[in-house]
Amino acid sequence: MNDLKSEIRELARKKNAVIMAHYYVNGDVQDVADFIGDSLALAQQAAKTDADIIVLCGVHFMGETAAILCPEKKVLVPDTAATCSLAESCPADKFEAFVKAHPGHTVVSYVNTTAATKALTDIVVTSSNARQIVESLPAGQPIIFGPDRNLGAYINATTGRNMVLWNGECHVHARFSAEKIVGLMAQHPGAKVLVHPECSGPVLVLADKVGSTAALLRYAIEDDATEFIVATESGILHEMRKKAPTKTFIPAPPDDSTCACNECEYMKLVTLEKLRNCLVNEAPQVTVDAATAQKAILPINRMLDISSRLAL
Ligand code: 13P
Ligand code: SF4
Image (cartoon, rainbow, N blue to C red):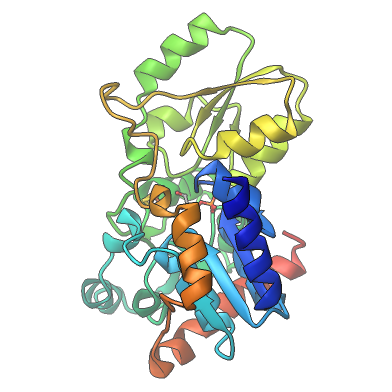
């Protein structure tokens, strides 16, 4: 294992490659990365790297976002089968018809979308900045929000907006059970409950903190509590335990305890072996056709500009 990690680091050094990993990938892959982050941080980091190669250890839309932001660089992903059920729930042709059916609406899309769907969008958001970006739009402006209906409903509830929501969801976050979390809260009365906004309404109301993976991590490090129930993909527990080793992190159970459904099987496709092979072969490469990329970069840059103006 250590040999494989050393080999990966040596390949990255020789090829001037930067390895970026999302908090949901396997812990050993996170450990070998140059940079670990949430979706917003990965996009921000890709936009400013001076490496020749970006290896995106995450799911496909994350590689696409990096490829759109850095057309002159080689963007690699260890496994092209690592897609995202939420992005897949919003095919561009159907989304285009939805947009057309709502003329005059500003189109706000979550970053968990394909490049083709981003190309139909006015502003991209992530779970780190969605509320603030929606709040920055003029009051009364009609808005379409896609594809995550849970995140969209949460933003509507917290901002008082009435965005029209695309009916998509993440199969991992949709499966957390409010009932089981209430059971855990009874067993751990001092525990704080951390919830990703892709979870359903009944789970969100149980939260002490709702936020992106990075926001939940920050809260867990800074808060005085010593126990936390974590309702998001369980990969985040790796970094939580590293950054706050004296605290206890309890993964929230999914509704079906016979499966490891609080794991994203797409994120878990990324392994050290595939990462090594991808650096050796400089493949698979993620490319986005120029016409789509030219349109998709506009809403991504709008997000990055607003985020930097609001210091998010
Ligand atoms: P973050 O924006 O918190 O990184 O979430 C990405 C994601 O895929 C959540 O399921
Ligand atoms: Fe997509 Fe859900 Fe996996 Fe995140 S956890 S990458 S939203 S399928």
